[in-house]
Image 1 (cartoon, rainbow, N blue to C red):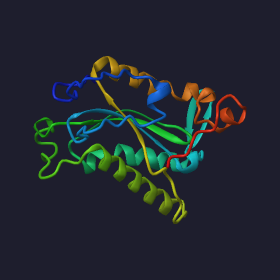
Image 2 (image 1 turned 60 degrees about the horizontal axis):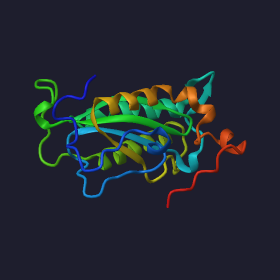
Image 3 (image 1 turned 90 degrees about the horizontal axis):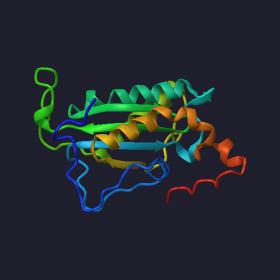
Image 4 (image 1 turned 135 degrees about the vertical axis):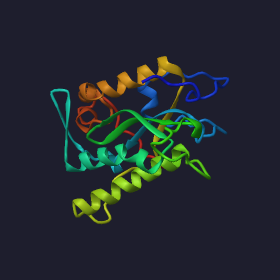
Length: 202
């Protein structure tokens, strides 16, 4: 899937290329940037205290738990709630998710398939917040874990700038399970002393 005309964010003075060692670890939210504008966004959301709730990685492949399947289902259900949202590459990892959200212009919402959005267009922060709320509620009900904190309160995002950047992010997401044994979100990797423990979000 290509980033179509109207999906690319307007260039800013600072052009940032995708660096998985940086962009999946910390927010690079741009000051005064309108996160409701059409564009492609790379999002990472981590579990509360980075607990491994969503399954395990075996031989470079992610094996999802029941909670992991619920989280995946809620992610893929987002376009049903937000007609201007299109989803691209996505992966559930043991204690986080990576995904690409594309916000479309109202004129690009498929005619005859979904109604064009009216009134306020929901931006990226509200969409991510809704995903976290939907998935936490559904997981707590399904698994009988009332009141359990599923997600960290913040999230990480990267504004995707053009097709080269998009393809790099897609590749990173696709290859994430294969790199789990070296991932600084992997408690076993951190515990072995190879990486410092991640600093909690404030």
